[in-house]
Image 1 (cartoon, rainbow, N blue to C red):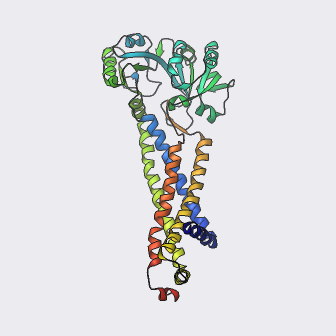
Image 2: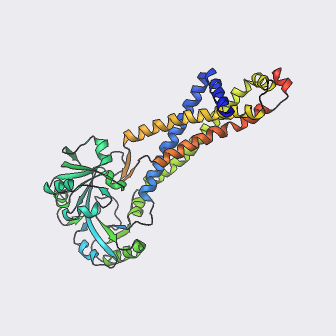
Image 3: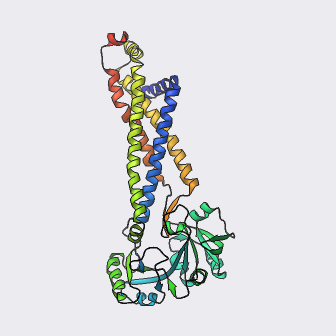
Length: 382
């Protein structure tokens, strides 16, 4: 019970010097905002590029080509790939982007054969009516929810990018970040609209029967076309993303240091504020000791100040970061591949726990300082 009462007393101490307290809370909020944003970037990078045990997709690309504009493969390669041991299914895909460089607003069109669309969307929330509407109109598109939110698009709208105009048949959600930021159209329509001709695609997405055989199947595919006019380079999908967008990956990886710097800055900011407060209350604390307050009571009051600043400032930082990321619909794209920054519950919990730890830790040294010295000297404020 005394912990709660002393916590309320610590809150009153903060209110007595409200300008100093508000400035510290604002600084804490800024630091936690930066930490939350960086952690969300790191989670988006991890989701897009780190291979997991169940990954079973290979990407077949033109060898020594990176941007979709430069990768051109004959569509009939798909029939040869399907006959190889270990191959479950093959989907030829035409990729057209409005910007092949790194951008926050890249539109990626993916042309998929009409009879392969259900196979492509195995992990997405797509209903039969949407698929049928997509099939009925050659110029229709199914777009990811992140692209739709960023461009303010709804089902039935007309949409134009990279010289291609489509009608939106529906909007999908997906566990795959690439699907969230793409527009899916019929393959023959995109081949004609992009003027790249029928019978030519950008890549093949290959599903394998056994995910442990990804590397072996990739070698078989590349060996098959090694002497052809258009040799291939086959990699697991997430390895393909990590390699193709390596500059973007390195940039996002570097932001982890910014997040660490933000945490350290918040720790020192709160500690400095509490040290100043404790030094200004030497006589006051001595009087409290003389009327019966124990050392643990005074220590908890000091720790509680850091705890309260961490909770209030951290909560404001987390809330503002959540609103910023949810409404911003941020995604960085490079060469038609996207890293989508979607905030996760685990990131929020991690930031909240860290704010509590920082708040309590920052009060340890000031709490020890408040107990030092002779009581008589403190009463004299020496």
